[in-house]
Image (cartoon, rainbow, N blue to C red; front, side, top):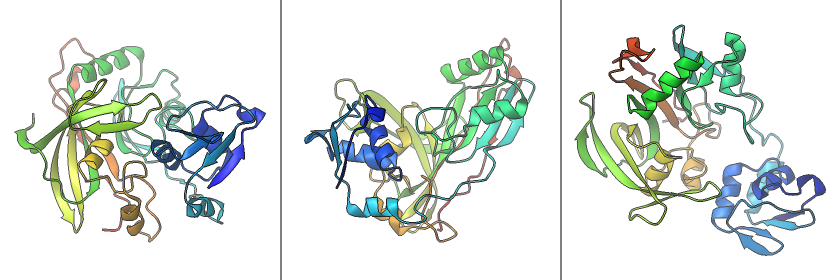
Length: 320
């Protein structure tokens, strides 16, 4: 356990941000997990919410000493990733599809670092109007669609809203999933469909339930196992619904967490695996791997992309 007194500088900041300021090496995932288990106390009172703290309050973080020792050890911070922020997959006068690398946020925000995808694209295109058509998580790599002008953005967003874009992901998960009933997808791929209910709390935490509770929303995913490597499966997942952390939370609930996931995964599993160079796994092994476009109406400026499919083969960061 470690504790600190909230300074005037941190007055009215959320407790997770205050903890990261006090202990810079701690990961947000560790702190949110501590909140989930009520392992953070403010003036001696347990809290499970990312509430604001006030100057003079004493915050206790009940994490194992090893977490803090690792934080303070030489070389504990990960090496800077100097790879390009993105690689172009497709480009036209109106639209850009890129492969975003892991560890880069799609846009600026709290605790997202200095670089983000959309700022990098705007800089490279010298076009301040370029904008995101959809989003993926910071530590998820893969395909992101970017519009180059306002009309292109509106028409692209309409495609997602009208279910004319199918999104598929590749992931490494623990074990071999067998849940769900077989279904035939729009491109005749046979997958298994699994459904549940998702609760998102005011502080952003996500929980999956088998039985609907007040405020829950439906989550539906389809998947197929592409390959197995001992206790690890390489799966392809198609999102029917698109909820916060859907794949990560749902598959963890099924007993098959994404490899390297520090929030929903199992530490003992992640720590037992290594990156190809022998180092610790750096990111969750999840990639936005495929975008399939349906029949686009003639009055949509992206009509020429009807039926197109954009895919990538992810480079998993795990020694298999």
